[in-house]
Image (tube, rainbow, N blue to C red; front, side, top):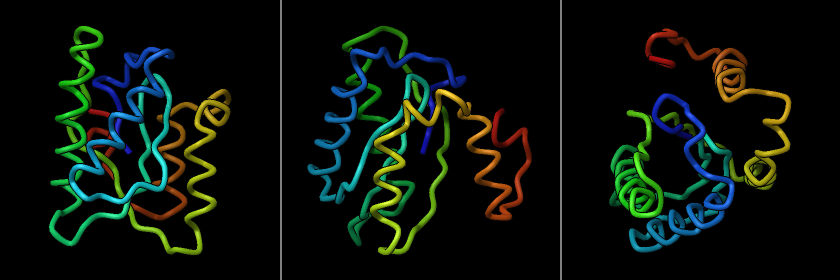
Length: 135
């Protein structure tokens, strides 16, 4: 998961599906398996299966870099935040996570990205510094 710079809503509604499709093509070019990509106007979630040849950081940097360049050709002044959040899941949870990613618009009608992230960190007992999380 990663957000737009400053978590601003800079992914236009009419561009979201095109951006997710472009991100999927970036993944396929890099032999990254894709289960789901989706999000809102200010962030994206990706459920991926990395190849053995790429670390999570390398994967994210490729996706962020290439999708940012593509978005800047579509709309001006687009940027992703620095950094990302990532975790692994068991195969038993893939279906549930795919459904969650596909329903981001519905989910975020009542919960902000910031609330979602803090809840995730707290529920999973992941220590964090709010300055690191939200800059």
